[in-house]
Structures are given as structure tokens and as C-alpha cells.
Image (cartoon, rainbow, N blue to C red; front, side, top):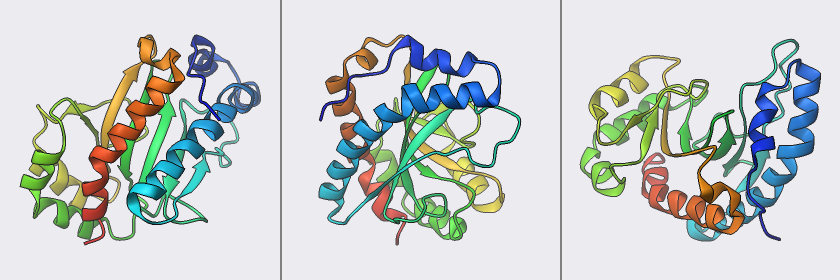
Length: 205
């Protein structure tokens, strides 16, 4: 089982008009790739975390009119769902691939996780490379690099504002050559998630 990489056609999916047509293209072009790379990375994470992890592929089931602007897979320790748990994500917008360790607003213990992070800022700053990115809203493309973000402010916002989120990881532009090489990209994902495992563990303390 080998991941073959992403192509221009995958990104062009998000320029297709209409919910049904775009969902059909996501099903045909992207989800088979998600199943392949998702299983490889899920197995790798299960090994490194010492527990069984489960692959979830976004269904976009609540959508009735507007087609999705992005799509993703998520890997979590829960078999039934991922949104209420810390999880790992790989996904696409029309212009980039994102790789995240994600803490989104559905987390019931968001404030506790934020406090654990605020109490361990030194660990986070020592663990996460300066070129990694942070997003405070998974539905938007906006990101800030670790080098530039006011980490305390971002985490206090995550703690105090119900809809605030905290995602940390990397982006690859749609034209980045690594995306065409499935093996290289898979290794980049594994390496990114391995780097972020200490934060994943910290979120449970």
C-alpha cells in the first residue's frame, strides 16, 4: 500500500460548482487517497502512541446547499468520532495541504487543555519548530508561524472563547513538488506528527 501523492486535479475539486458535483469529485478523487495515506499514518501513530488510533474521513453530511471549501481526514483515539477529542488531521483547500494536530471548539475540556499548554509554554517552544504554523479557526486559511505568534495570547483566547480553536502543524502549497511524491509526503506527515506527539500527550494532563 503506497500513497501516490496529490495532483492539480485534486485541488481543482474545490472550484467545481454545486454541492453534488463537488461532493462526487471529492468521493472519486480525494477520498481513495485519504483512505491510503490515512491507514499508513494511523498505523504509524498507533505504534508511536502505544494505543489504537482510528481513521475518520470527513463526510460533510450536514451540508445541504454550500459545497465544502476543504476536506480532510482525522485520526483520533476514539472509534466513533474525533471532533470532541484531540486529533491529527490531513486535508486540502484549493491552494494547499494542511497537516494539523487539532484542538477544535467541540472539545468538552478545551479550557483544561489550554491551561496545560499555558503551564508548559517552555516545552511547547522547545518542541515545535519555528516554521510550524498555528491556526485559530480550522474553517479559515489564516495561519501564523510559531516564530511570529503571541503564544500566550493565542492559548488564552483558546481557553476563554467558546469558538476559539488551536491547531498546530504545517502547510504545503498546492504546487510544492513534495505533494507529487507520495512517499516523500507520507514521510513528511509522519515526521510532523511525531514532532507534535509531546503536545498530544500534554493535552491529556
